[in-house]
Amino acid sequence: WRAINGNFLFVLFTGVLLSIASLARVVSYSLVHYPILIWSFFFGLIVASIIYIFRQLPHLRWQEWLGLWLGTLVALGVSFAPRIQGSDDLVAVFCAGAVAICAMILPGISGSFILLLLGMYPVMISAISDFQWQILLVFILGCGCGLMVFSRVLSWLFHHYYSATISVLTGFLLGSLLIVWPWKESLEVMVDDKGREVMLSYHLLMPATYGEVTGIDPNTIAAVGCMLFGLILVLALEYAGGKRKKL
Image (cartoon, rainbow, N blue to C red; front, side, top):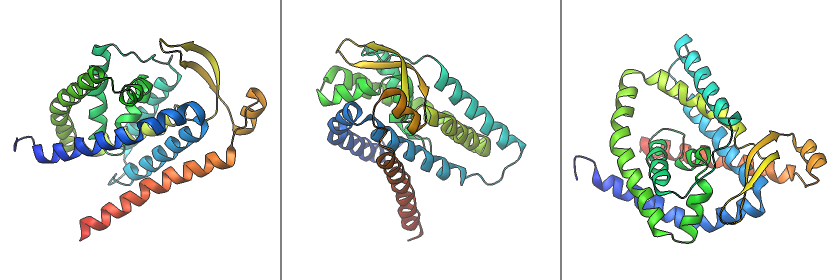
């Protein structure tokens, strides 16, 4: 228990589970009824994360610029690739948990964001809202396995290639902004086994164009407000955390 810092991990997982349980229904409802606003909030969170991680780079040499471009290109490849349709298959859930927990121990990247990339976010939100205990248990087991394996790899990377690792993470977040861009025109949509529409491919649009093409109010002012709220929230938490370390 001491070797894996069990007390810290117990508090961490307890906090994560409580926050997820309390917000799952809110997020699920918002994704259906206020998609532009919730995606705008996510967009602001990621912009703030980019700022936070980029400030940790001690210097910018050609190696850091290369890592930045590499991370950006990988994220852009994910952005323009065909969307992965989430599945409640237990093997897929286990793998999603293993990958998502890795993101939680990376600076500036959240497990929820990785679930979005994998197409598993709606599946997990639904599992939490409806308390599908089998899916939740398998997901937690995946998180535990991923944490035990990836924490050692990450420790080695930070010890030997700190700047390169940080620059790749920054680039990955930068390129991934396209994934959470709020204004999208659906090109291909499928309906999952629960009757929910899932966007498989899309065009990115500017707010004014989005209104003209879709006939839906782009909610530009409210969306920008949600972006700023997400941005300020992360930076404020970072500032508060920095002050505590100095005390």
